[in-house]
Each structure stands twice: as C-alpha cells, then as structure tokens.
Length: 513
Image (cartoon, rainbow, N blue to C red):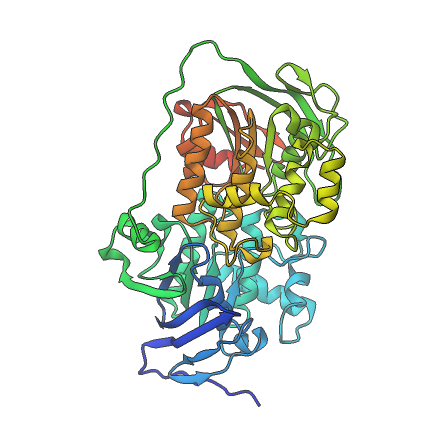
C-alpha cells in the first residue's frame, strides 16, 4: 500500500537526503551525501562529469536505490523504488534527452506516459489549460516531428505538470535551446517556483545557475563540497570549487590576418533530400574554409546538423563534386578515404556513433585507426592472437587528455559523458589532422573538460589546421570562431566574420523557420 505524504505546512524543507551512499562494485558514486531542498526554491546541482549528480537524482526519481542513507519528503522517510512511486510522491523529472515518439501527437505522447486514465479529448483540454496557465504554448494535435526542440521540451514539462509535482528535476534543460527559448524557460521555472513548486536544476552553465537558482550545491567525486547562496558567490569561485583548482583561461587565438591562405574545404550548392520522415533536407549549402580558420555553425538541434555532418564526413556519399578538399572532389569518398587525406570527424552522439558502448577503449581506438595501420601478415597474426590491438595508442590518448577511467582499459559505457568526450576528441586529434569537423564538442561537459577541449581546438587552428565547429552553445561559437553561420531547417545562412555578426542576430537566425 502506498504511503501518502501529507504536506507539513510548518516545514520549509520539502526534500532531504541524509547520508546517501551509492556504490557500483568498488566505485563509490555517491558518498554520504546530505542535501536539503526548500519549498518553492530553485536549487542548482553543480559538479564535474562523474561527480555523482546523475546518480543522486536517479535515486530521487526511483531509477536507482541508495545502498545507505534515507530520503525524506516533508520530514517523512520514503523508499522511492520506481519512477511511478516518485511521481505519486510529487517528484517529476525532465531528462536531458527527451523521450518522445516523433510520429505521435503531443496528446498521444503524453497519454501513453500518464499514470491516470484520461480520454483523448479530456487530456487535450488539460494540456491547453496548463499551457496557457504557465506560458507553455503548444498545440496538442501537432505531431512531435513538427515541433522545435524548445517546443518538445515544453511537452516534457507539461507531462510533468499534469501530475501536480511538488518538486521538478531539470537535467541540463538549456543544452539544446536558443537564447530566446532559454529566456522563456526561465520565466516558466520562476513562475513555478513562485507557486510553491521546488526545482532541482542540474547544469554546467555557471551564468545560468547564477541567474536562475537561489542555492547551489557542489558535488565532487561523489561528495558534497559546499552549498552556497548564489547571490554571494561569483562564477569564478563556483568553477574553482567544482574542479578543485583554478580554472585556466583559454589562450585565445591570434587575430585573423589577411595573408594569403590555402583553401582547405569548398562546398558548392550541396543539397540532399532527407533520408526519412524525421530527417532534414539540405538546401544549397555553401562553405569556403581556409587553413588556420575556425568556422562556427550555430543552430538548434534538428535543423540539419546531423545531415551536414554525414555529408561532410562521408557517411552519406554519392555527392559527386559538390565537396572539394584541397581542390579534389571527395563527395563520393567514404570515411576511411577522407581520413587518409587528413580529415577527422567528431559526431555529436558519443554513444554508439563515436564509440561502441560495449567495446573497450582500445577496441574503439582500433576501429578509428584501422585505415592507418600497415595491414600485413604479421599484423593479422597479432590481431588473431591478442585482444590488445591499439592498446598503446589508447593509453597515450587517456594520459594526454586526462581521461579519468574506473580502471586501465574500460568499456566506453563505463566512462562518464565528459570523460568519454575527452577520449573521443583526443583520439580524433591524435593523428594531427589537417581538417576537423566537430559537432557539439562540449555538450554536457563540465567547465574544466570544456576548457581543455576548446583549447585543443584553438591549438589546432594556431597550427594552421582548418576546423568546422557545429555547436548549439553561442558562447562557444563566439569564443572560438573566426567566421560564423547558422543552420536552420537545412539552410545555411551567409557566412560572416565574427566581428560582423552579433549574438542577438545569431539567436534570431537560429529560431527562424
């Protein structure tokens, strides 16, 4: 029988974690964590990749059970054994990666996920009422594949609000939003907070935490380092507490000079029809990139970034002469051939695209480096008798890029998101490529790892390498790029020098349909 949690009007604390510990084998993910979230408070959770944030909130939402310690709601100890029970207790969660079916309507997506039974018409009315009340404008009859990323996030929030949550957990909620959508989201969260709903807000973006949260708790290596009032602390101090040392500033790239430069990549009127119902067609894409330049391509997720990466990397071929590298047509050449020419690619999806999750790191390295090896009889014999091919290369990548592993040669899925990203980028940069096309390099990555990755990108550019940076992070685009363009609905805007375009203009182009 479910224990109903009555609201204690005299208590200011809604959720309390007391001495929460969670282990995975010998690895301690959460170590004696104490945390209090007040009613109506926006409370941020900050920490490096692998600090234990996700593990902790998964226990609040019933996806994991603590090995030690207790969780209290309104001063009563509760055992949250599954998400359905968490929702019954008034805990809702909006995950970083949305769980929506593109072919279904907004109403249908919400209907199949609710614990209560509603008729379709009744639910449509409820969705409309909630969307008007909280400023979450959405059409219940629209299919999800017709929605922007910001609108899809609204669907996830509405789905939680229909369950009347007392606390809403938001995991990296702005990672795929335009500046205008972030502004609207913050307005919604503040209104929810003012109504008495508590928000647990997980983010790596320190400026956002300062803006939206009243309190911030910092985790490091599975332990609480500090809990602070955001008004009384700077982003610099937050960063240093999070990483445990001073955060080194980027050594900025020298100014773009007008000396004669060699053309690296030329894309001329590239068009591709979408491969499936939920894809995006590319329309007359034009790119001119010199060596020593970084071209930043901004855009909201789902506007053709994946299709552009597939075309430039060779996952999609048959493009004839629309793509030229160093004056040679490569549009019909596959990935391995392009790598041998000196091109490298980092796709946005780390798991099962940039890596095979169930393969060890050396095995993932081997898949990328295969085309560089001298395939002879000796090599084949070594492959047949040893599972450690590319082992030395992997160890070197781990050491050079400060990849923190639970043991020497783990499977890719055993690394935190940030450490896996450092490994992927280190692997791609290991061969000192001439041209790198990299998508969302610091998505979901903490400030320490992000700074390291961005510095590597700058260093490549300083060494006269050409780089295309595809990113949803405007700060990153403006920090790293020489030239900037925006991809929207498969169209690439006119490329401009960074000094000739503003963040506001880029934000408006990102939101353009």
